[in-house]
Amino acid sequence: MKDYQHKIITIPNIISMFRVVLIPFIIYSFVKLNNIPLTVVLIAVSALSDILDGKIARKFNMVSDFGKFFDPVADKATQIALAICLAFKIKMMIPLLIFLLIKEIFMGVSGYIVIKRTGAPDQAKWYGKACTVVLYGSMMAMILFPGMPEWLSYALICLCAVFMLISIIGYAVLRRREIKESTTKNNGTERL
Image (cartoon, rainbow, N blue to C red):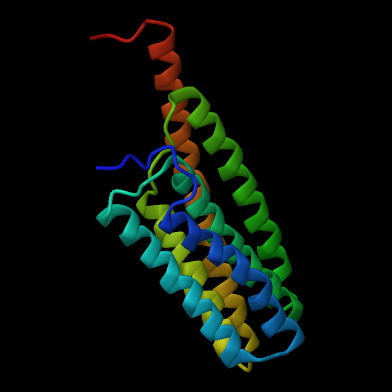
């Protein structure tokens, strides 16, 4: 069986790269063309390819270190792109976009520190997955129903902010513990 752990060019990674290539088309179709059906189709293709790359990676043992890093980057870049699209139409989306950027900078920096200390990235946790579902669901609703009442858009934006905050707190606690445990192991003070 072929070892894909250290490979960059694998089918799942190519699919993840395809998702990144879709981002400018998603933004252009929504912001410039104001073509909601095309935007939704592009987002659906992106989401389906996200599911597909993970299934292929696991089924055919094509999980790679690069894929573990790049797949979440493609996800986050897509989320940020959707938030940028909506910020052009819904001004209240701008603070959420800023919060999302801060969250992702925190996640990137803290994740990098954990990888440097422990040698392995941590797995996605329920609060991270819940945040992703709420973000995508809320943003898709705002894209699909541009005429929704303003109060409902604001409620969805607040819901996204709450789940982002839960995710930040959850990962901060987790990564602090991982860093502390790795420091204890490296200092040779771990008890058997």
